[in-house]
Length: 121
Image 1 (cartoon, rainbow, N blue to C red):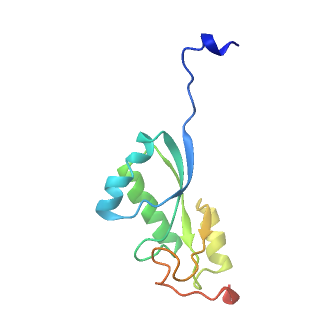
Image 2: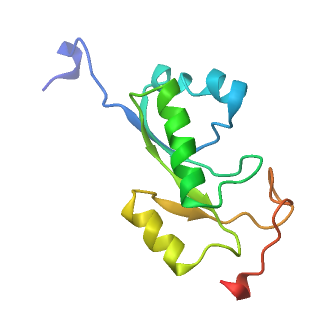
């Protein structure tokens, strides 16, 4: 194929592996820009206020995001916390939650909210 004859190249939609979609009014502003930016799958960060630390919180958050923009594949994550047990991880996997995000204390948004000892996990 000669590139001088190519009239158009169509790229598939992209994957964004690190998005902060926030919540409430901010989420309503940010979430529609996913598709506008040519992305159709995102890995959603859980550091809301309060952070997403339970499976139910995560599913509720995904539902809120889908209500704003249903044409995106939201890969959801939990905020690593001492309350996260192996059973929590198994339950999360069963319902399609993709991962768990660690936020070392004091280095990013909400990381001061829930101190964690990695020795307990």
